[in-house]
Image 1: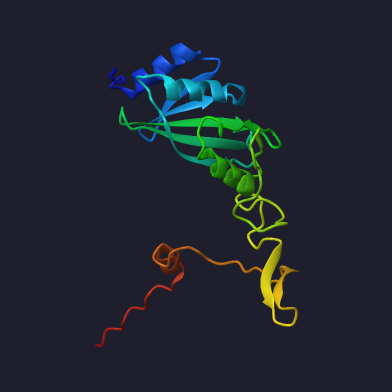
Image 2: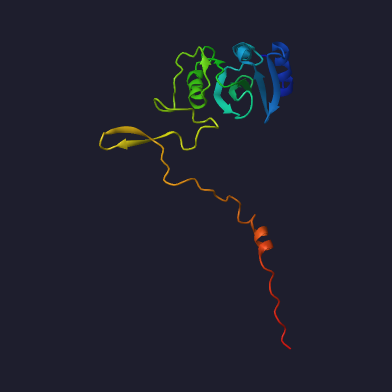
Length: 208
């Protein structure tokens, strides 16, 4: 069995040489090799990572979305892979804009089915050619995507069981009190201010 290069930096350079710097860039993040690829090149690069003997990244660990609100492109789809034979992990990132789709990799990794549905449900990132792209964690008719940074903390509706109708009903969210402003400063951090504003201690009068 051919061994993978010992250095992650060497491995990243090898992948870039094989695939071209126009399709993929590599960097070390938090001790892991991270590849950033274009959506149009995703499937081709994953086939290379899976089928090349010295890489052998055959196990898809996870797919998750990231919302960088205010940045362009706004979203990232992050894939984590494991090579059992080489004892290596690798991270692959794809940057996408609002409404832009990502090629599905269900045909390459069957467990991507539910993982892509989760990213679609929570972030609204669509995946082209997915066999069953439906919500998977939120309820039927759910409005919005709850892990987006601009999704309201209270949500849009609240769910309760109606005893009269004997079913689950949805009502608009009604807050029992207005939002309050809380002081999150540690009381120990505020001691300096308290001491500065405190009146100076009075000296005791000496008795003759």
